[in-house]
Length: 630
Image 1: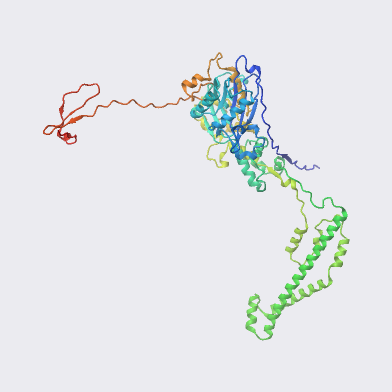
Image 2: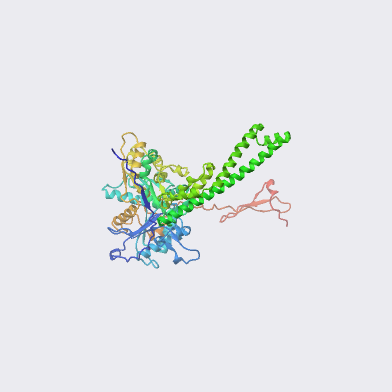
């Protein structure tokens, strides 16, 4: 006979990781000779990654893109990224250089650059002699690029700058590692901290006209999870912080291949007990009184509880007897009215008592008289001897609330329940009270990437936007795009994300059509590696010239918004400023002189033209000219 095994509970604890300040590195000799090596900075809205463009090099610095400075503190006292050991206490002070995924606060951006250069061993007070590769948002506004170029060229005096889209760096780097021949054609799905993008790439260049953005990302998922758990556990509002919600998303969430079917599976109690993650919150376990008491102390405590119960019973008997006696006296007084012949008052009192006849009154008086006599007998007999016998017969393992059975059956049931709740101490599990049961929230929060309507956002999901972007191309070009669908970005780290995209593509594509979905090797950091590989292949001043690089001369001649295009960059759209048309030379106003008795005449003198003979002015105009009298 098979035995049913109990599901094993999965209990986890929040790590609440605290960061340590970044070390200050020294510049290696290979980064200076024979020429300064470019610095690669993946300027992400969630995390900034910086390092050298050397073979086999990894990001030296990885920190949150936030800065905190107390009011009135000096600029040098600003804490950047990992300098903030715990973010939650300082969350109200945090500032970022981003609005969504676009850099708008360049004061914070300058502090980020100072932090990067200082910890990479570069003295940024005078000059940065290294070229820089910086990522930017797809379809970045010209003003933002102009301000970034002004910051790099004017403040840091860098020799060359290259701008590129992080998702395209990851796409090209992954294709190169797979051995695919350039130029590449494909569809890039990038999902970051603030928003997600659909980027069509045709023949190695971004089709910016058909690129789409969905304003849903990791920050919206974390806020949604925080709102769900705070509604579910109103007693732990302070413990449900954004930092812990991000940890839940990164380590305990997953994307469902079929959302509705997965929710049906969660309806099963066995599946719920097996898959729910219990997050243990920190708590202090207080020792319950009497836990380590001896057997004699427990016996004495039970006897005291029994005596308290007997005293409560005796007090309630007296109160009940007094109430019954008062009712009996009142009814007897009404019966005396009948004996005295006061029929009107007697019938009036019967109506107030909701009785119909004197016989019913007499029956009620008899019952009440019997109850009063029984109550008096119980008070006279007493329960002291009976209570002592019950105490001597108590079992050593008797629970603390077993003495409740000694209460009289004639007392109301409500009082019995009150006594039980007062005497029985429930077994309270303090650890379980401080646990967060994360069940369907594990898949509901990643689902907002595909259904933003779950959070109330009136916009299309990721796959709906992809279908809308594909519909703008011819069928042959659609086949080429879906043959290389590439997933990158931090939100693609959810388990099951690739299977979900494949399922959605299978549903939207024609029958028996082919497509291929590829995941980045490390979706969160792959953009930095792609930018590093591009800088190694196309260094400034190499065989390919300065393609993709902006020199200081280009900045001065073409403006800060100028962009040198390459395979991973945006499309440059020059800023067209309408110049005002040159003014048209106007003829001089006619000079009219009128004398008394003469016909008014007018002469028009143009600049550089000799004056012509005077001609007569019509009489209708002569009335409006100035008359000069001699």
